[in-house]
Length: 120
Length: 108
Image 1 (cartoon, chains in turn orange, blue):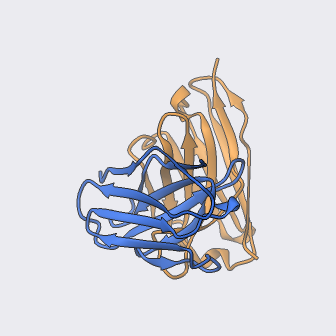
Image 2: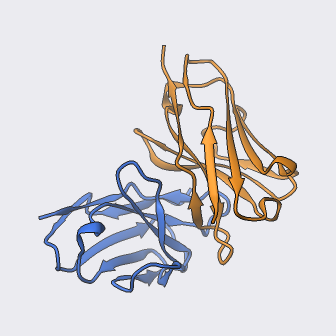
């Protein structure tokens, strides 16, 4: 059974930094592109970032480009999201997601999410 | 960016009846459209991909249709567990995937 467990969400002041983690199990982590998706009061569900199998290729949404960095450690079956220069609009629930093995662009498995609150 | 718009925002339907939810893309996504169900306190659950293919374990009362810019999710006979929020998502524009704003399906 696929399990994705996010952690690291806290209350942080605007301009602050945070690192989210996602522990994966139940599948061969290194075989999959992995994603971060967030759910915010302002924009609803929003794709944030992806990273390829070996971590050499990453993409980020325009809204977080230059502020967020996705990374992974396949030896630890873990996915990370380094979040810098945080803004109030970054407040939301952050999910790590594994794509379907049938179709790469759909999200078959999600964690339970970790809550990030950016507020002074 | 491909904008995905769902309608209506809220749909009130009685148990046992049919529900029809709509999703429109701002440009053609061919059949690269998925549907998700989200219940309170839970992550989204994949229902449909490829516009009409049910994901593993999804009951056949859920069906999807459409191509290009217009898509529909139909739930043929609503069960109590089907009342939730439904989202569509386009995945044609890799990797800039976009979601609709959701349709809340509530009990009438």
